View 1 (cartoon, one colour):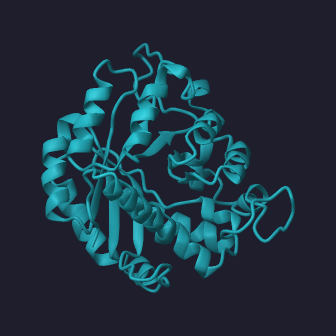
View 2: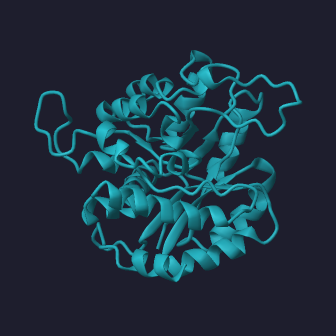
Length: 302
């Protein structure tokens, strides 16, 4: 842990006036006792910021904690797209100053089904960021029947959403596991789409991290087949830990594995700084400006 804290502390500042040096886009919170205080202590040590994916029942507690520590926490509403009350829940999260929705998962229709378009319209209206689960879905209770399909959450489902709402920022959790190549290609042409590499991916590919260089291939390649401008291809990635059920060990493990993978792939310090904080900081600052221009409720990160 001491090594990790020193390493993060040495990351270069990627944006002027930015003080946060690590942004975790993927932290679940369902009201687990003591988790927010323990996470706060970790974030203080690495000068970090966590995006809390907050269930409706945990909203009151999370709101109080976020308001008390606005430089360490930002809230996303963990809503179910098929809930009959989803629109009112989104309004409630928005009034509370929450700045996104997620982790969106386990839907009854494909993510890009028109049944969900009114939800995306509302999120777009409020400049909310959307974090989608992509890829295989775990099955913690195989003895219980469930209406869940991997196919509905394939990463390619985000392509239409990203194109139809070009100002809506999307994050695909898990890099489409196992459809990594599809995730990279969808991300290549959608500047509003990013990915975290949480879950099992960095464990199962630990002996083959160079694979990521084959799918995130277009960095530095000048061609009609590559996007113009921007950083290297690896800057389509953002950091996430997928803390779930209050298990903060996931934070430490994810930090170590991200670092190992990026170093193995020889990703530059500049691009690593973007992955760990710079990209999300810019997204959050642009979002804050857009929300303020609309007179919306927004949380200022200090």
